[in-house]
Length: 128
Image (cartoon, rainbow, N blue to C red):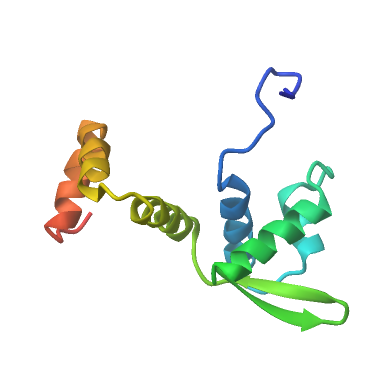
């Protein structure tokens, strides 16, 4: 596994690039080409164009971004934010498991006190 000079693992967490791209699109406030997205995320060239295009295509299939053709390329705009992407992944994982109650029970048991309190407030439909 590659590490940078500081010893940090260069591999991204699952969904990290998707979240970064959606955030960049939302902050831009307009649709962007894959090259513009790459330049915003990695001005030093540390991110490949193909990784951005592949991720944008995945996001489009998930209906998380809009896409419109412009010349030979596409422009993309965000339809969701990073929290929406995480929630979608959590829902997909949960729906793939037959023992949903068991998964939810373990998830709740593993929450820290602060997150457990937040979840209780959300379930009671109380404001943050």
